[in-house]
Length: 344
Image (cartoon, one colour):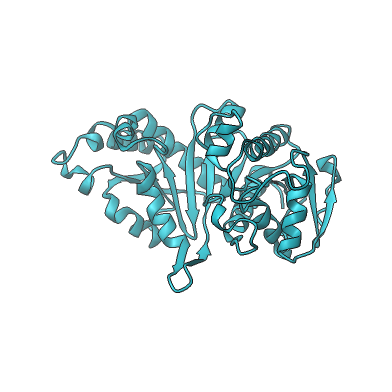
């Protein structure tokens, strides 16, 4: 049995519908899963036309009606958009309401075990807040709607995988949030994620917070008071965790194959190396030639992966968006679903 993957369309004013159509124009996706887009017919129809892919569009009322045949995109139509009711490149409450409800529907289907994973297209935080949904992003929506308390963001690009102790907070607040309990929980989330990806004995590199991991307290105390005790606790339970490793070398070691995943202490510490490996910009054309990498929320009762980029309003509706990250996110969801649900 192939896993059924629900793909939320993202903000219809952004590139979400376009990259969804482009991703499902690839035959290898259908060889591995049954993909179903959760969104709106009007946006899908428009994207299908301006990309000139002209794939078949088949609305299904129930997930179990999906057949997963290459050449035809199957979708659930939530009917938030009337023809020409939204505008590309523009923040709006309508687009935010639609995007939020695509995600909500995906979560509901996954909790009901009607789909094996949710893959999310990009949303616009301003739009969903204009619509009255006060979240800072996908991660917080998934945590709230699944009742999850302990969760973390994982990014992956190629062989580099990074999970974060803190994410969308100020640097001052991030330092306060780095506690022994939180670091220990994230090490465990990293361990469980690697097991779900089929790695039998995960090797986890844990980054320090301060320069040179504080040089035994010369440049800070977080390594001694929080990070190292958390590592020792994890090791006592059989988890292969190493550190605190100086932040300027831990990612080099991970790329060399010493670690399967790195635990980063804050947002940019983890995001910068992942995007350096996955994003490539051509200055001559001012276009990204590569936008690979995925985002995954760990600790949820369901599988959720996502693109590692935003709505890209600047190029929305023009047919030039890069679908690479969405393809990566679908591939990761398939891999995790096969292990979790013991699918072939």
